[in-house]
Length: 239
Image (cartoon, rainbow, N blue to C red; front, side, top):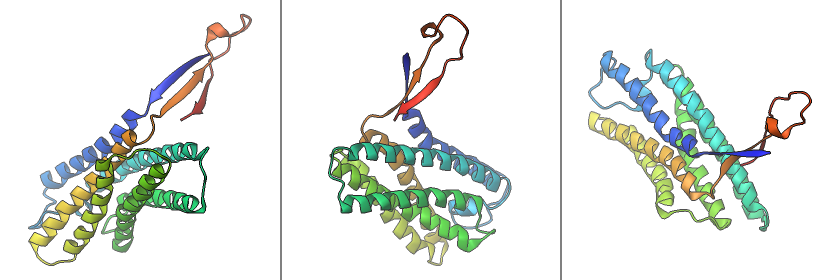
């Protein structure tokens, strides 16, 4: 039996690079095709209303949803491993439930906001955006708290990024509801920064959590009986 280890670093790196590329492509079409008809800097939601930006954003963020949700499952598996051998108190259980709820909520929020534009359904899009931004903050707060409770060292700048998410999200909402082009431009900049903090936090989690790899156990042809030929089989052992 031979083992193959696959590192998850590539997946974490893609989680921060991919959304930047998708938004960049959307902006290229938005500005080059003359869709920008405002006198202020638009938010991401405004730049992905028209075609082809709406299709690119929807497909791209759908893929990002799969990546983020996969990393969320990995994060939960690692937490469950950390819980082994420690006292799983009622407080810890409650925080773990909230960790699961907010992680699912933030991921689904991204999926819905990318699928439903402001023109399709204004209320649903904004509700999904709120679920993504505030759900992300809550999820990473519970994530940091649970890992610290398990004795895992969370870097100070990683914790700082978590609180920057909620700070920028709140200030963004304040400026978004103000009249005037300057306020709307500031709101857009704050939204961009908030998104950067969210995906940066996902990337930093790779370094905060215990080292984890995907281990595959492979049965090679050399280890099989001589009579007959069998196809090698792979078995996922753990994360």
